[in-house]
Image (cartoon, rainbow, N blue to C red; front, side, top):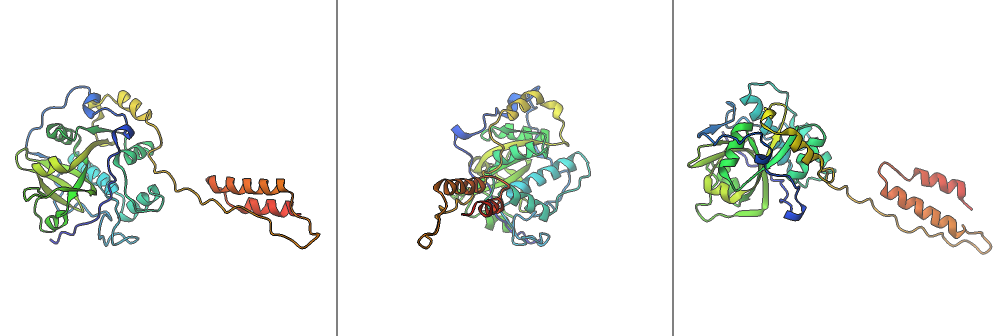
Length: 313
């Protein structure tokens, strides 16, 4: 089967001073997770090429954007839920590619600019799409694999190497054995679903399973998250403590809306000699009303036009 690489769409991890002050998942567990028992496989029997592109690249099932968008974060969320449902033998109704794209573009205010995983996880929590979320220490492979095993997959933010597309197309593992280095401009969101603990990790991306050497994972993985959903056994987690910390986070998790254009200053045109002009106070009031409309959500200029009709000299 032909494997077609897709697009990226993960924005960089925020600087330490701007990151959410959440503790690692291990601090919210009622008891430590067992050490990983290899090999681990939480695919639930989903075949390697049956995960669906979900519009994160060329996708004929997506009628609105068949060439794909950078919705890897949203695609990864659905891939993670697919793994959970298959592992727990549950039947789910999944969003279509068109629906995922529409959700992604609403989040990005119509712009295909990608997502910061921490921010979008907070948005999904606030919208009730996930029950909670927590980071996992991305420098600790055992912690990652224990979380993957316990919660049937983890959401992983990586930076890809420049040969990632070629290796994917050839169904070869991602590697740094030939001197490849992750490119900070190639941020991508994927889901870890398998590990043998000795040689390879397996991730879901671009509709397929993709292998990677342990050395590649160590170099390329930048962040790891557990997103708790209705399929998970949340009794493992001290949910009151975790939810208290999530609810204390600043902001909404949504990208800041693009600033509304500020109208040019309104200047009364000069009239013929003897023609009365609008008093300066009315012009200031008009300018203030225009600025208010420009910076207030859900307003338009119809009210300003009505005001002009009522106050024209």
